[in-house]
Length: 131
Image (cartoon, rainbow, N blue to C red; front, side):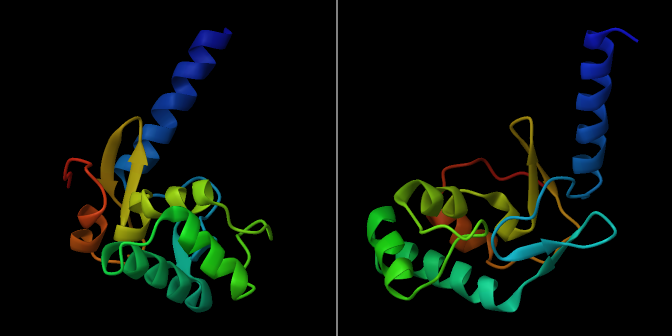
């Protein structure tokens, strides 16, 4: 099998998984990978995710201010780093938190439990609703 064929096969395999609600990459903050290619909520981290969305949607905090508040509370990222504006932005624009899987610019319903509502997600995101 040549490289292009492998690449195409890999792309189609990942699309198939996403279309079937299967999360096949490392879990984002707030979740952990389960043994069956889905995500389980980490309650302590999920509470932080909810707070981040509330700070943005209700209090209109900047990404930088949210990062500062998390760091002041001693909360670390999934990789045990300090929060920065870009890591906060990544969380707030990640549709995984509303129960979706993004692959190749499309959104698919995930098999995992959402942490926030679609309504709250779309309050701060201009993505098209899918699924």
